[in-house]
Length: 162
Length: 458
Image (cartoon, rainbow over the protein chains, first blue to last red):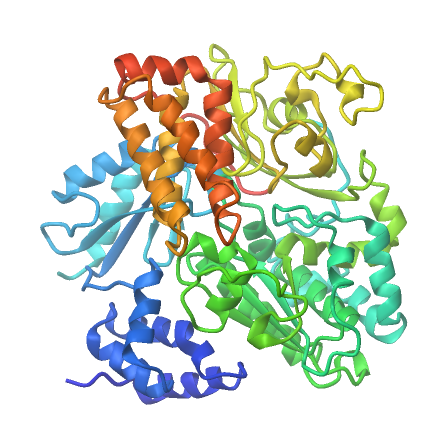
């Protein structure tokens, strides 16, 4: 089925198009809008964005595959990014990741058995002074310990309907 | 802890510091008003030149000089693009400006647009920094409500617009031409230079690309006067005060404002509160983001010649040399973003290098073969060395691969990978050769986890 955006999002697209001298420049923000709507970027989303911005689908696909934030496959309602780069690893990031892999029963890149969490590793998230940290959906959670991370996951799991 | 004057960070601690009301009650936009109503664009530019500010994004190019590269009498619109794609490992300073004082950045954008004759500014913010994005968008909207962003800011017919453009997760987009491609809706692959952005940047128009901290410093430069602001620094040709970051094995990781030219020793042992554990001394420090070659505290400055820039520190430890663009270049490393990663004696340098090379292999955009292949190759070699599958001759291969990456690519990413790689091997060769014979004991990174929580900006 063809992908469409609801009317209020279409208004945002119209507004975005006024900000740049070219239509193409709205590609990243429109993809963000679509992902917010659907959770990931499907072939239908790519076709929609291409049509909306007068681009070839291959051009939009090229953009989608270049950037790590666009999910090319469906993800769980919660995406957990564990920062693995040096400052975080010096302060225990690897232990956080192992803990989550055990808890979710999947390696980084996979989705938990209950379907509530997708686990990913991230490269430096610019929170080095507050290491170790994870990003869950839009939120940063910093200065973590194994205990505080587990509590956090408990809370989010309780709120998520699978 | 030394108590340095707070300029850039003077509103950080206030409740709701990110709102227009608090920012304006504490001085925001007074300088922008003066820049529009009293000063001429030439006068603003002269102050920024006098300030001798070395760009805060990592390359250290003088901001005032960069503004001067715009062609005179251009017929196309001039753009200001702010690089807020903070992503260099170890670096977390620009985020504090956007989260705690976004109005300072908006004010800096207004003044800069006035100075360079731009009417549109795009702030390219790293996509993951959702809090920065929310606060900055709210600040721009507040400024729009008051007419500071709009058709006639402060009653002057110089229309200005500021748009926030959200990235989508790609370290390379911090490289200015890659950022411009990403702004234009393309894959973030760097462009060949020339033409430089000042001549043909965003949408083919003359464009100035500046880092967040550089732009946020402009209001203070005008408030104090360029020369006075420059004199805050302890070094010549490298003016002002700046944000320093420290992370890793220190007691008080965080962001601190201090004059240009404090030393790593002051950053680690004074501002950073000293080493995390008293039984584990400093082994190595990456001074300004992962692309800057590592330093050892037991290496001494060798500059017997009185004319040498480092002569005043001859015989002292490398970590006693003041943090400056030129002093650090002379030391064989780079100042970069001025955000240090501190490692104690528990850290194996082969593991540390592997961690960083994983980063570079993941983030190479893949456009140039030496970089795409080289970064992956370096990571594979290090992975083998760590897992006991390597051999001592792999160490020479690390050097060989690095040397073949340098200078053979479109942008500086490959050099920014090869330089720190060579630095690690040069400074800790024994450890790499040892790993080639016996591998690396598992868990040689991150053993001192979870002690002493860090803080944000202080």
